[in-house]
Length: 364
Image (cartoon, rainbow, N blue to C red; front, top):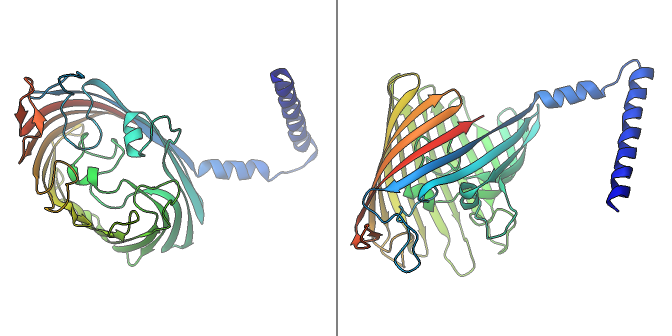
């Protein structure tokens, strides 16, 4: 059966090749090469690969079925001990005069966490959407796209810090739905969206929908975005409401300051927080940045992260050294929590964890 199949394939390829050659020989001109060239000129391939090393200074670093597991902040990504893998990210995008698409695929542990893979799933889609420019100031997008809330993103190449914040980790990652983007003026923008429940990116199992909105301001020095979502995420739960402010500004040629603050509540449970992101560029190749985050869980319910009414502080100091397309990030992180949620090297409960990460990211 395989021999017959491959023989048939070769036969049809030969017919296609001869047909193409015949058109070139006997036709004075053809539109196909120009159309293909036009398509390829608007097609782009980008992405990144990343890996890292991680260890705790004062926390347990081993896997042991009887004693315990390696300690890490309860945030997304970069939590495995020793040398570990991030993800490979390949983005195929096309931007035509009126329409286009993005196909964003991820492979590896960070990708699995990002797209909520179940064990054995073949789902590798991070983003998959098509868009139509109705006018030069109005765009419609349908499909799966990363969230518009928050300061940080899934891609390690687009974040200054390699580890992620609590607010990013417990806000939404991605949405599937229809959104409309409006350019109100040269500086002001707006977005409205209707979407599946948060992170149900392949289909809608409940027949429930979430609404999103954004108001943005951008100029040459930076930008500010006010974001919100509202809607039921599952049957029997009150609607989720989250409002989020994300902003960042170049205060000088070498100093940048970002800010993210958010409030999220569902059925009385939720969280709020604020983070500052100062960054100093010391040379063309090196920059130093700090994330100082305060994160507080609401009093009701069981809590999202460490428990109801628990407070967490995250101080992350990151260096970013760039050599061509390669980015090397050494990172020191201190997490301090109002409860004893970590284990030290002797398996005694402690309320803080200090750790080190060294990451390598190649972006193309």
